[in-house]
Length: 624
Image (cartoon, rainbow, N blue to C red; front, top):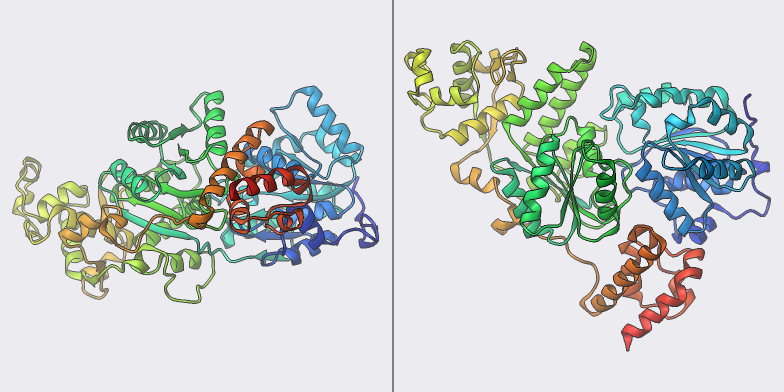
């Protein structure tokens, strides 16, 4: 039975606090950011909407505040246990009546939470989509007073998206069964196709979309040639992120475990995470990453969605993701606190071939394969671009960067040289054509460089006109050229002959000289340099700086130790007690009264009451 809408006059009371006062008193924040205030006002007065906001942009407040301002309990549909647990822990620390219903609860604990919901004793309840869609849960919600439904990670509803989850399809029942309850769908990652599907499946037609900038200016993007990816990763961490928390993504489970072991041997605190690990070990590793400082987690993409850890200083990819959406979401887990962070990736020709083969061999329909291939091609365009990466990344989401250069990506900081590579491309395409489009990179390069291997002679390719015409370039230069020609779309990996390349329609115009091909200039020295961490070469890439002055460093250390003690005592991650930004605010301002402490961002009424005296005592002790 549809629940009636709650009129504005039926809000908690005529004297109820304003959104801004709740923002300050509960969350300790002095002001809204971007469109937050408009979204909160819209939902609080009963409106539906779609919210696209980058990771760390404050999406959670867009449903948490209306849930506190409206009568009833806000129901948050969340796909991951880790996300629910961390968000609820943070809300409880702030004095909000929040709870979670998921498979980790006993029957008695779940029943108690259900009774609290029906009794009106909850402000926010997090539920997994599988549980929400059960007849028992839907019946219970029909009997409760509901403030709103928030569908988090809403891109999971799209079958075209990078993280499709079938159970999200059933969420269309919310509009059918609870038509009077406002619905807010939220995601950090959605192109136009995904946005349209979210609107359609969640019945948000006619509702406004609030689209914040996708730009994360604090993240520095860097993509380097893959040589020895594991050695490159160790150098990157040791030179620029020693002692920092980070996430390393690998494509396979075996590579996850091997990489974590290699980092551990190198003295880096690294832990593996993938779906094949024992559940208890997986949980322990995740808890260590969340609760301890300076832990690096090495994972497949099974890790990370919904992880709220704000002080992840880098995200590294040792393999090419599937799409720009996946890359954006995964790299977005760095620097959620707004402080400098790195998105670093190693990339090679084999990555394109592997991803293309996975698409071709998938069981999806042809339409799905076409969309997947288009998304892969867009990502390859990003990694191969010689222009500003941020401009290319934002352009994919329909956003234009005001400046042509962002000043915070590798191509802006160390601009690559570009030359007319049309002749190089013609030689390469001719070699592919004259060998019957049946061979891979090694064989093609052997022919171009004039190397009479047994295999070259076996097929008689040493007698071809293209034999030796590329002897002026070495193997690495040819491999780089081949990768770029593939990225430009003039060659494609053959789905039927593993490792082989075939000409595309556009290759004809290149061979005829109609289409020019501009390639990154690849001298032997340039390739050697681009295969290493740029900071090692003395470029503009430097380690992430700390914002606390040397005078406050001692207090900051004491605050971190105190925070760790409180986190252990309460059984929550350290950042749930206070994030680094709040600690740095205390270390900088060195408050001596409750009023001064309340002025620090992130300290609301409940936390001031709970921790105020201890913090002031700590500040005074360190000042002596």
